[in-house]
Every structure is written in C-alpha cells, then in structure tokens.
Image (cartoon, rainbow, N blue to C red; front, side, top):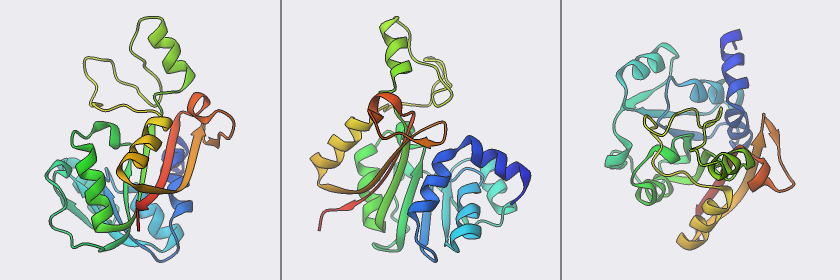
Length: 203
C-alpha cells in the first residue's frame, strides 16, 4: 500500500471497518465506488474479488488505473445488470445520504448480495445538533457542504437507520459507530460521527 493510500484510509476510517466485516475471498460489489480505493484495499487485505459501479467519468478512469473492475452506471436506475445473489456483499459507503430512491436501492442491494454494508455520516452527533439549535445547518468533516451546494438529500441518524431496518424487515448483523476512527460504545447516536452497518434480508 502506498503512502497516499494510507493517508486516504486514515481519512476514511469507515473503509477499515468495512474490511473487517468482509470475509477473506468474498465477492463484493461496491456501489458509488469512487476511485476504487476500497475495492483495491479489499483485494489486497481480504483477497476479495468484485466490481465497482460509478457514474463519473474521471472516477471510472481512476478505477481502471487502480486495477479495479468497474462498470459505469447510475445507481438510481437500479441493478438490473446483476443477477440475484451474485455477490457475498454489496457495499454503499458514504453514499446512502446522497441517493434519492433509498428504499429501492437498499432492496436491490439485498437482492444482488447475500449481505449489505452501508456507511453514512451520523446526523445525530452532538455537534450537528448544536449547530441546528443555533439556527444553522450543520457543517463538519463528515458533512462538509453548505446547505446550498450539498449533494446530500436524505440525512439520517444511527437510530433512524435502525428504525428503517426494523420497518422493512432487515436484520442487522453488525453495527459499528466511529468517531475519529475509534469505536464509540457509549451513547453512539450522540457521540459517533460515522456509522457502519452490516445487514441482510429477513429469512
């Protein structure tokens, strides 16, 4: 791993948490895969194999440069190109809050994959609450955009996502809530900045 990759992984601690959830040799589909860093990391550390899906031209080119198998496509149009049960895991990292058809995309993840892993910025963190109390929309390392230029359309908290899973019959297998790369075990919805969930459809 290069020094640049180490730096990027340090800035994205959710990627290390995802890697811990992936069993060695598993097949993985990474939705909104960006430059392919996660897939490359999983290949090198977990011997995982798989594909990424990305819509932006320059990021698709970066994936190819990283030696990652990538398909260019729009997640909002579904995953019709993939058969049911094609992958062990389908991943959506720090993208859940930016998709419009949340329920449909999560259901597609669980159709295509045996398990799903999502990560998202926790809107329930106390600093976000404080900024709202002061009358401002939150801006943070995890939510760096101003209200007028944000790609985020569906912000949620740890508790919100747990309720979402319960309502739709999804079974949570593992949950990790992080702050500055470290797990938060006490009051995670208040003190955690990033949440990582591994879950599956009900049997």
